[in-house]
Amino acid sequence: MDCKALIGHVKNLEEEIVVEILDDFIARNPTRDEGINVMKACQKGTEEVGRLFEQGKYFAGDLLFAGAMLKEAKAMLQPIIGEDLNYLKSGNITLGPVYGDASEQGEEILAKIVRMAGFVVVNSTVKVS
Image (cartoon, rainbow, N blue to C red):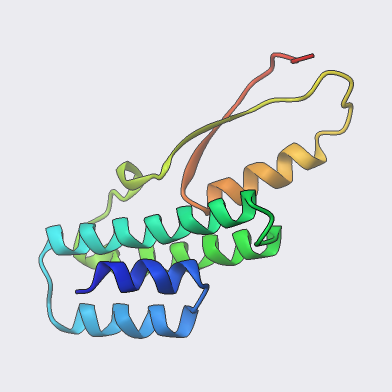
């Protein structure tokens, strides 16, 4: 399995190619460790999408799409990896309100986006000025 190519296809939001690669991978009857490595490559591609978003090259919709692709990859790889995929989270992110911002809608939208990208969201109740 060429994980670098898989990372690039996820990063470029090439869903059909990613699904085809995963189908071919699954057909080879891989080991659990191989499945974990492929899942980590999918996560790495999703992280690249996040970086492109931070640089202003991708939009929120691209983050959502990448999160949906990652969710699909997890579903496809779950029979190989096993039931507990939570330990394969991308990392933790803490969200909290900004001083003077009464609206929590933006925070809720961002929380949903980063959860879909595989992060654990920790909500902070501390207001920052």
